[in-house]
Every structure is written in C-alpha cells, then in structure tokens.
Length: 391
Image 1 (cartoon, rainbow, N blue to C red):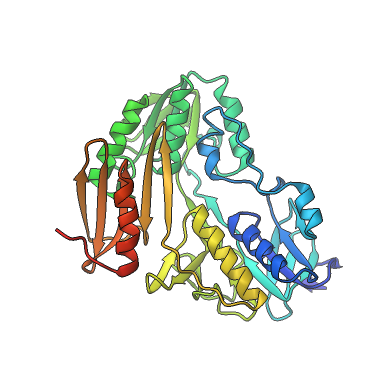
Image 2 (cartoon, helix red, strand yellow):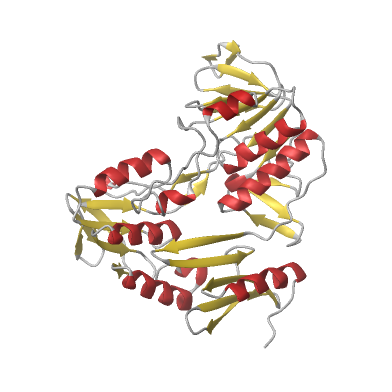
C-alpha cells in the first residue's frame, strides 16, 4: 500500500478502539472504553517512550527536588487490562475513509473508534542560541533539567506563564540565582491582568526570583541571555517556558477553529467515529453554553472520559467547570472559569490573599484566588448559574 509514493508495511493489529496520545485525555478515554467493552481491542499509540505519567508535578514537586510517583499506571496494569500501549511511535496520517491510522514506520492500525488526544507541543524560541535552552514539557525534559540544576549557579527562565513561574520558584528554592524574563510588564499579565500579575511578581520575589519585565530575548550566548534593550542577564542554565500550542497536525479533513479541532459536547469531531479530547479540542461545554478550550490536566481527563463513554455507546457530555492550580513555592493560586477572554476584572484584597473576579457580558466568567477558598467555591456556583458578581 502506498500514499504519496511511500510504502506502508501493512496491518499490524485487529480493529478496535485507538487513542492517539498517552496523556490524561488519551489514557482516560482508553480506560473508560475498556471498562465498558472488556473484549474489544483497545490501543494507545504514544510518541512518548515512557509509561503514562502525571505532568503537573514536573514543574512542582519533581523539579523542586521531591520524588513523586509520576506513573499513572504500571506496565502490569496495561497487561492485566489488555490495553495495548505502543510507545515511542509517531502517527503520520489518519485515513478516515478506510478507518485506519498510519505510523511513520509504515504500520497500519485499523480502528472502529478513534480519539485524537495528541496534546500540545512547545512553542520554540527562534533566536540565536535557542538550541541551548532547556524546555519543560515531558518527563525526559524534566530529567534533563533536574540534572542540569546540579551544576548551575544561576538560571534564566524565559517566559512569564504558569509553568515558568513554578519552575523559577523551584530553581530559586534550590539555591540558584534565578531571573525570569518576559515580554509583559508582570508575570501572567496576558492571562490574568496587571493587578493579578503584580501580586504574582511579589510572590516570586518572596521566593527569591527576580522578575525582568517588558523585555524580549534576542540571543543566548554561552552563560548570558541578551535582551532587546542591550542589557544581558547571567544564566548558567536557561529554561524556555515560552508556551505551547495544540498539536493538530493529524486534523486533516476535520473541522478546526482557532488552532484546535472542533468537537461537540460529546467529543464528536466532524467525521464519523473520530473524537478529540484535551488540548487539541475546542469542545462545547454544556454548562458554559458555548465552546471552551481545555487547557489543563483535569479538563483533559474529563474530556477523555466523555470521549470514551461516547465511543462505547453511553450518554456523556462535558459539563464540569474548568479549573487548575499553580504552585509558586508555598503559595497556591487557584483558577476556575471559562478561559482567557474577559471584559472587566475586579480585585478584592483579603487579609492573607486576594481574589480577582473576571466578568464578560454581565456575568462572571472566571476567578483567580490566593488563600481565598470560599471565593473559589463561590466562583463555581456563579459560573454554573451564569450570575453576575453582587456589589
């Protein structure tokens, strides 16, 4: 069999359920389908050579020097549950007409139901010396970074997002002189606004991280990071925390929007028997009443479960209110809401923390809290009821 002049070696497995990706969405989908159909072949195809693992601890406990159990399941679990985990394999093409996927090695895996859960890929730096910067997206990245920490006296974290804040605090906690460089005036500004960013900058400072805002990195030279104002920051270790983008290279023939695969509340794509979940999906959340991007672990796992149930023939919809936490040293920020878009924000100071309420169209669309768990719980009620914040 050929496609575009390339020889494919042939079918290597019986048809059944396939999840592309071993992250929370793909694993949850496969687990759920297997639970409902004990005898239909279930397969996970993953580019990652490691057993499925939890990613949130990589920039928290793991990098900070702890030894959390990252594995989501042992190899024995996959064997006992007859879930075929194929690691270190890249899917090159999905043939939706004939219902099979083709790998870079030419193997063909036929499917009855397919879940695309390929996650995200890092946004790469495009500056001289970028190849010397380390990233923090996979377990292999975390291992390399953790080893590099042993030999570093100073570090520069490029990017002021969630992962960058967590990683910077961990590096500083391990005795490394750490500077965070970002294009925004304050950390997390694009996502949460200037007032929240000011408070996060203070939290970073309290954890020993120097923040250098309104700066673009122009090059990395040896142990220096050069900035667009002509200055430089010393760093034996450079970490690129420059964000990610959904990996939708397999979305050919599927409806996409805003860089994601369009799915309904059941995780159906525009093609029969093909579903998408996690970072790659733009799914309808029935509680929000509109499409909402899933950007975090908990949401991806729930979408995967919905996809697995739907593929198995059971009723399921995505209806939870998305949320996540960010740990900077000993400080934990919690967010609950529908994503980045908002029209107005309102910061409320508390004795030992704060809440930022985000509004659009006359209703609450999100809340960021620090030491304000009552507001965090209240936010879910307001989000579910589409209510405004009372004065």
